[in-house]
Length: 153
Image (cartoon, rainbow, N blue to C red; front, side, top):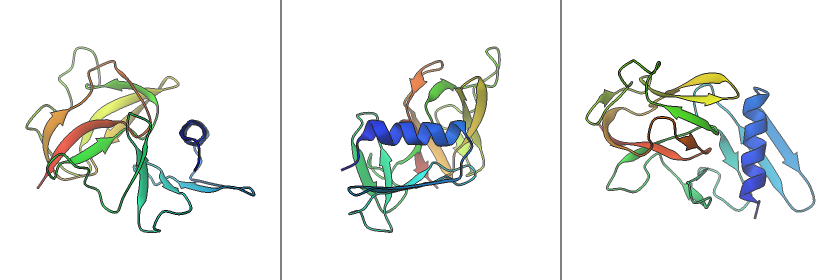
């Protein structure tokens, strides 16, 4: 099994260097990481079904899920695609991008994540209603950390 710390470091290097794909192989492990435009990286680890997407939660455990939903009674998570600082609004004096009950579309910007002095807009990637906000403005976030829970529409 691949070490989660190694995996996080590989994803961080991909983001820093704006790489779309990374493929590493040795005698014991094979890891392929692909980044889509606005999506979170997709990580293929041997032993998981090809149709599964590998993500990790804030506890650092790896979980495999065949779809976009993530527990919490059918709610779908919007996850951080990188390590950085979470900002709920474009400026300190501005209204937050979304609040509880906000309607979102897949292209709706829900927050910013600052990584290495670059502010990255994060899109909902799901259509629905914001049911829970799991982080506070200014919090440090990890790759794969759940930021919001959305009730799909």
